[in-house]
Image (cartoon, rainbow, N blue to C red; front, side, top):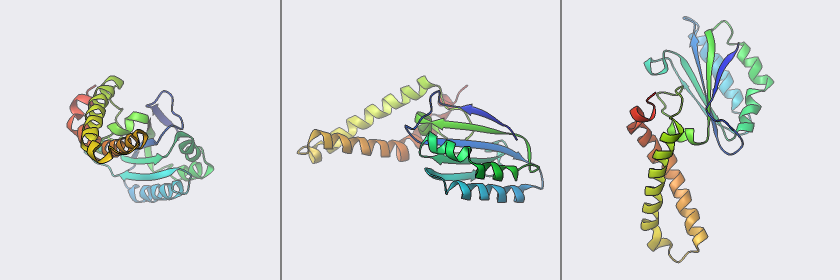
Length: 193
């Protein structure tokens, strides 16, 4: 079984998390066997260094009537460790005869993580200039807002500690609160081909 691969980042490396999305069309009547094979794959991947979880989306109009497996590793090297493992190769053999055509695999590293839509996991990320425009605005607003808000509380602390606290809060807010909402709000502009 061969995969069509689309690498979203020109220079993936160990600098951050890697998210991989694999879409497959399952032959009618093979759904239960496919789901068992995928369950085995997800369980095996969890034992590999750097694994940060997996999500399985069942066929729907949002997934183009395909199963989509999304898994995440803490860096590119650990992701490759899983993808090139003998364990994974053996488990993938179990999918033969259960799927139609080739799997579509997409891999994202770096900034693309902040511009993902769970309902559209297999879409390519926005153009770099659109990501830059959005991030510049959000980072500026967050840094300014956090500095104004926290200055009275953090004033006596050394600058290095203050900056660390602001950066940690900024990244957490962007990752879990702001970017998921902004990406949904701007999805028509961001993902406009």
